[in-house]
Image 1 (cartoon, rainbow, N blue to C red):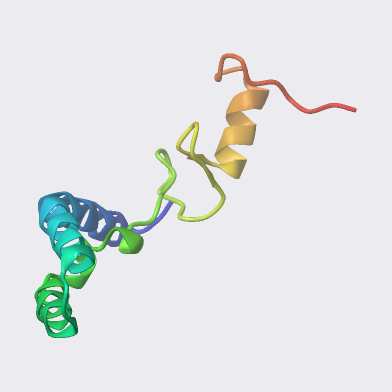
Image 2: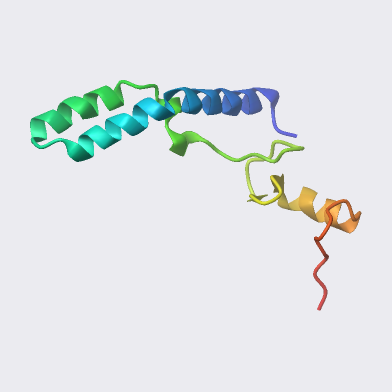
Length: 100
């Protein structure tokens, strides 16, 4: 189980990303439409003034049940070993164990 503080930090980042998503997107559109280099720099300064944790690249997927940050499957939202355990217990419909 991941520390509660790390999970809360990730939730805070998600909230900030949602809050500043529209502003960040509009500033990036302005940069692409700006004609002169000085205009681009001014808009870039505005973009840099936004909080760092509002950037979507700072978000990290975590396992839904354990909060583990690595080996996550997007389709299920679970880490690899939890996914494997659930498949073995037949808790995920449609998922089968690999056998060869």
